[in-house]
Length: 343
Image (cartoon, rainbow, N blue to C red):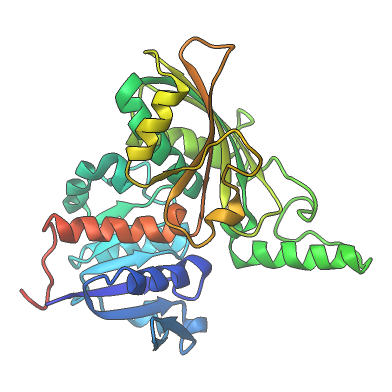
């Protein structure tokens, strides 16, 4: 007998993508329920060749639900995830609400799958930040080979990371530029059309933004607390797909050719890296794709045991929806979760 799965935030970009991926990957669900806030109650969303009517989270009974995929923001997660988990339903949460809690596993299946067994403490599993997810997929196999000491990453993050409002703002501003209408910024701190903004999330006391801090803290939690990480996060006028320029310092020698071969064999990685025009990944190439694309792998001539690389992925998939469903598959495949109906 299959599982009963609830998707919270089903009307948002990531929630809709979760429904698509559950269907695409043939997740063993007997029933899938779409949930959102009361104001979205009755809205219809697609699930394969079916249409689901959205139900209100506030009125829903989770007592017979096995897995809750949650993408409704931190405040909703903080209120509801503990209540849902207390009913024996595993919450896989896409927000940052629980990522840094010691008793909540933070999981990217290609990186630290074994940590998933810790879910039983609170029945909550955290999904990492979208830019961290693709980064650690690329770093993990290299860390296993040559031990990473330090990572310097600059992100080029698409507007879909800021939700539908971010995508709408890029579209509306771009149109306004072409027809010579006034350009107004609502979602972002500055105009995003034909511009880049070195500011994602709120500023912290030391001048780091919260987005940059997330990349640093999450990489350490999932990969190795001894790794030094520094990050600059930038919003760019791209609809879907986050890109990252990554500089890595290793303890042990590793060549670009060795890194290329290791990454070609690594789970979740796709290497596109020839020294010719167009033989590298860009965000538009990764839209709708599951893999983390890696290009421009080369040795850093200014650093002993240093490499540079370019990492790109669809942030709505590997950065969010796909990773959450891979975590659910991990629970099922490792037989860590029995379907309540079967029980």
